[in-house]
Length: 82
Image 1 (cartoon, rainbow, N blue to C red):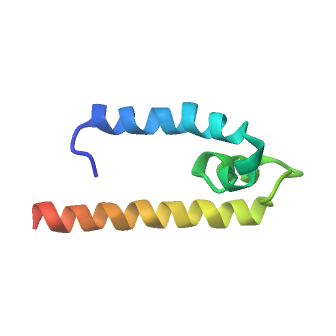
Image 2 (image 1 turned 45 degrees about the vertical axis):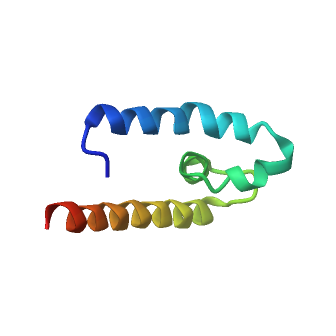
Image 3 (image 1 turned 120 degrees about the vertical axis):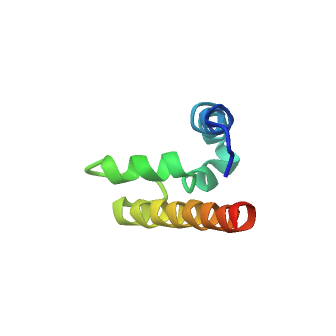
């Protein structure tokens, strides 16, 4: 969605390394942060997942995030480059 590789990395890096861990440490919204892509992906890899999501639930959340990213990319491609 962002034309520049630097722009894409500058948006992605804070989300993965700053926003998710900071919001996950706040107990009032810790259950909501389990639905962020990095946290849901971690649940897939654990043999005994802990928290709100199980392994299959984490896989579903990751699939939804992936579908959202592909859909947004398709929309931007059709809008800009058509």
